[in-house]
Image 1: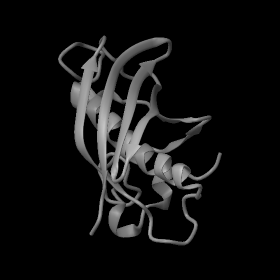
Image 2 (image 1 turned 60 degrees about the horizontal axis):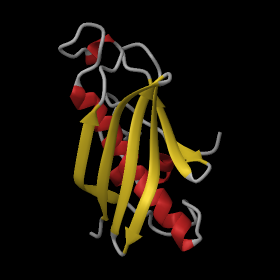
Image 3 (image 1 turned 180 degrees about the vertical axis):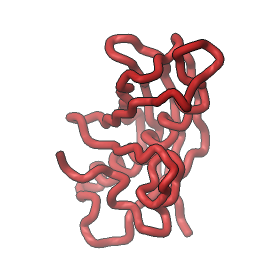
Length: 152
């Protein structure tokens, strides 16, 4: 498998709890291309228990959608520019301006979750990404993200 989008982040931007490779306590979420869309996988352990027995808490779901969405926004931008991530220039990074999550059904613990991203549109520094999270064939959550390209 090719390098994850997050593997191209500069060291000083790799501390995120959800996807930062330099955060020893984080999820280390890794996002990749899946055709024209993006995909990530995560298997939640018992420590992510929610109010419904044997199911994860909603904050984890929002966190996974958030990190995958921001990474996907960067990947979609590179693709729109006709460039590859890691082509030598300073990496493009996005931050979340808005994240809407719809919880469709309880999300089980101990099952691999599939997080998907689909580009809705790009307008300047703004990228809209449609997101979904499923456990097996069950759609557990959907989301909409507006990500803004970070400029230091």
